[in-house]
Image 1 (spheres, one colour):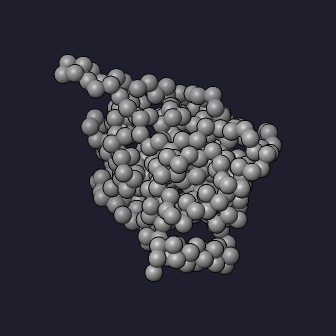
Image 2 (image 1 turned 30 degrees about the vertical axis):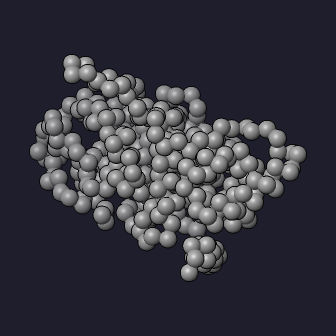
Image 3 (image 1 turned 90 degrees about the vertical axis):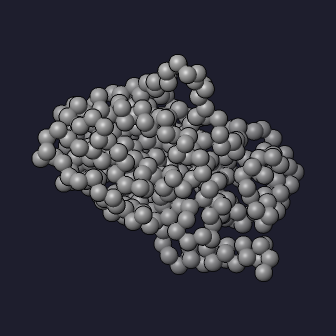
Length: 352
């Protein structure tokens, strides 16, 4: 069987399943952002009517490109007309297979004849490196410290925000994950999967994405040092990832129901770190409702929400668009032994 025939059969299977099984997914932590950095918004209800995001998925489906949505979107494509601006080199770098490449060429040829599509409104990029590059240090130079700009939302309940990634870093992480996911199409429980955590419909362990752990490890190591300052009751040197699946990514594509009020770890005080990787124009709705505050926190791209695992919260509904998250669950030991538990492999509901 040729690769093209195999891909056609897989596309037919996916389309058939999508007609039979209703889409159900739950929105996780995080929320709608603004492009202004270092700003978290708190509200008791939505005060502004949000506009639905353009449905790129439906447009791609109509062109036989439904499996390309993730990698297209991460590269900056927001409408079908944006495809005409993809270069040969970008299509090659995306790793598009021959079947999808033929469909892309067909769409590009048709759009090139349409006089209504003459202006490129956004820059497209397929680059999967560079955003995390740092100066190579000499023997006696000290590593530059990142300013996480930690802001206190509620000191009594240990709720904080900060800036974890730059916009460029967020976009690179999105391209890295979607490039990997596209390559895994047809491989069971690989790429975007629902087999790790129960609350989220599409997630992926960062360790599975080539280059993602090395790219983020300096920032995460420095964040751990920041956490010791934020939580002085933690035993120095005890913070570590809760299990082998951390950190992980979460993705929502299209309308998604928010999660009910829950805790990440109600019995023990571990730490939740949740960063927004999506841009302002990528989704509408969302936010993290904190029960004890009776407020919803909405973050900017690259910003992070930090709280203890026993804090009850809920994810607000996503109305439209694509939302991506970078999440880390940290285990730790407290100076107060009453708060401690053994740091066990495969804690929580991880199925790694």
